[in-house]
Image (cartoon, rainbow, N blue to C red; front, side, top):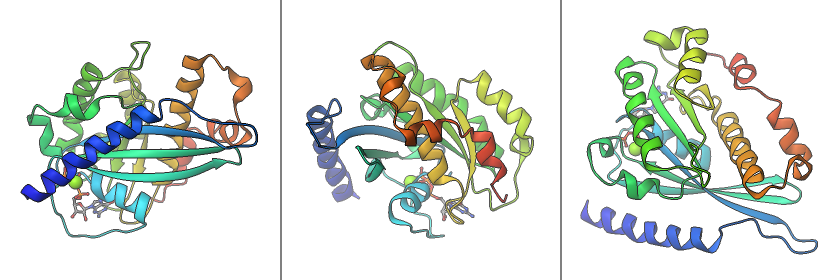
Length: 240
Ligand code: GTP
Ligand code: MG
């Protein structure tokens, strides 16, 4: 356990260094643009954060539960379009960290987040608001606004409990709590994880363009296509 902690700490330093080396997109003539984005994955214990990341990055799922200690990392490389490579640095923060005092350190320089809850346990949805408050109070975009955050209703391959049974109420909930959107996901059945990630990356790219003042002209065809996909449309394709 101690070994894991030190390994993670070393990785944390490495990623911090990497982030500072890649503060913006880079592109020369005929070269590809590269973006490095730090994304947080937070939520209650056992909600499925690690499983979602493993599915997204390694196409792997296990029923076996081993609680994350502190924080873990994964890197997902997206060939976004023919001119753009996006590297997503995924920070998998242990559910138990809500009661610790490290989240401020972990959240630093993040530009997007997923908050995950377990649809079979409504108590994990009750805790979502506490995670959102923790997030918004500790990390902001350079202009002071909240970082885009997408709510993931995970384990939708199972019987749902509470509010998540009413999509309209969930829409209202997200609007009220300032989520960019929400998706029903299943790490087990590989439902909606890619879609949710694409949705969040689009939000991040939009913010990047606003901040850098590049405007809509820099939007690629791929982005324009994805921006037209609302989370609601994607949800309909969910077989839950
Ligand atoms: P902490 O690290 O303690 O914060 O938990 P976590 O949020 O990382 O949860 P984890 O991914 O370890 O998953 C907890 C348990 O839920 C494991 O037994 C997983 O196999 C199971 N699980 C995760 N996602 C799904 C899913 O989509 N469907 C089903 N049926 N089980 C899932
Ligand atoms: Mg975990």
